[in-house]
Length: 150
Image (cartoon, rainbow, N blue to C red; front, top):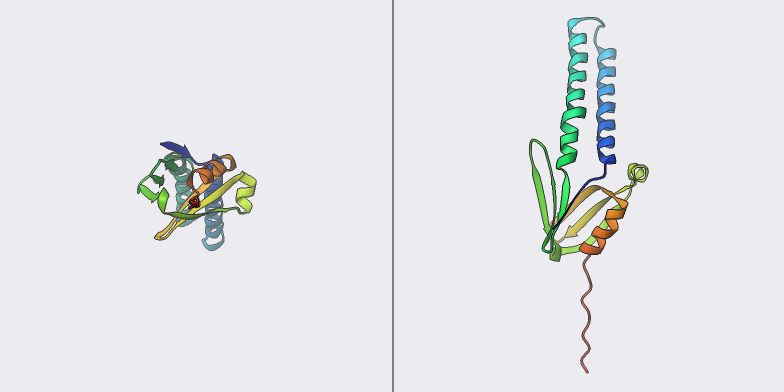
């Protein structure tokens, strides 16, 4: 059984997105509400509090809990802090594997692996490039050898 986590850059991307959302919300409050009122101060303090709790508590815990498990029978991706999700796919049911690359993954040197089977798909995001090739070799379906009859 092999258990490996996500790339460290995943946490940086998540925290960057959280900071961007907090900045957009604070900008909306500054633009929409009357300055220096109790509603203005309360909204800004609430946005700051939610950002600090998200960036320094929830997202690091989410990063620690996200990992994939590779055994002889199945591939499993598990993630979650409050609501824990576990998705499992049999290795024998994998039909094909897709490796996705986007502009963020180029900067962070990560890839997203999608395992496709007849009943659905399993998405494993933010894998380091060196682990993607090992996962592909382990999980990709192999063509059965043809037997020769003489």
